[in-house]
Image 1: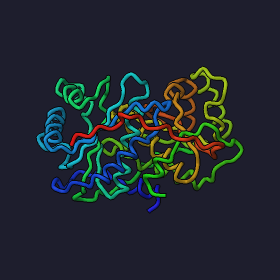
Image 2: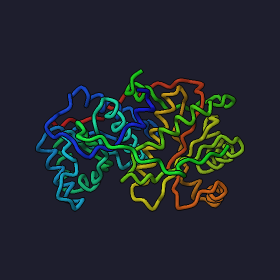
Image 3: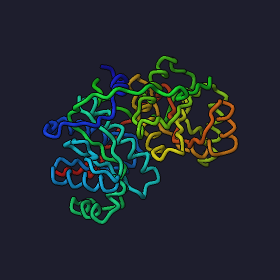
Length: 172
Length: 172
């Protein structure tokens, strides 16, 4: 499948097999793609936290559900959570972190895994508990949560909605 | 070349051949990839404006230089400018628009064209002149400029900087 076809095929997956952990080599490929995302002035403002520890993953899910006001697992059962944060002191950090998320989501599709962008990363890592997690993991600095890229084996294959009519305007 | 290798190979190009216009079929492939970028709740908040008209491209370059405080062409000679804007009334619009930019930048690399994210899209389309351009092009609504993806044939092939040591943390 060619490169652009992968991007067109990629969809947000919202049902994962919680008992099937992807190979670490596949996860490392996805992460590598994330680290090479473009960033403002090449300053590499983002960081990626790759969470496969079940206890930590489940606690992040609980916190996420709390901020979302949900009772179900906002990570949809995915066993891998890639948290992207970015250095708030760099003006382009929100754009930079989003591009890392985009590469992670596309790369997951390329290695035949499902993925989805989940929000509330900012709220969680701005909280005292989230800050304590970062400190425990040895992460120092003023980082803003951009998104959680959850990854796993998809239990269902969503289809793309039609693109809206007025998506593209040509000025020739 | 596999999908992830393209993402790793992609670099920001800052020198384009101004006299060599890419085929419209290549530009359309790039744009298609952009329209299939993920977006919050599938709401497709972004739009893409594909500018190949030289007069418009040059005026956008002048405005960009004005906001940047530069005297050179901030588009580095690129003949194609893909402006991405996103609907400000949708809370995820900045993330959504950034993901479109990411797909455009990666797709350009996949079809062997150079590209670069150029800022000041927000400032330009928030100005009276920018708003008049949008109106002239038939674009209605409250759109925020996210970025310009400039595209063309690269005159030089930049190399990637080393990734920073602390980009990735594993929580196993």
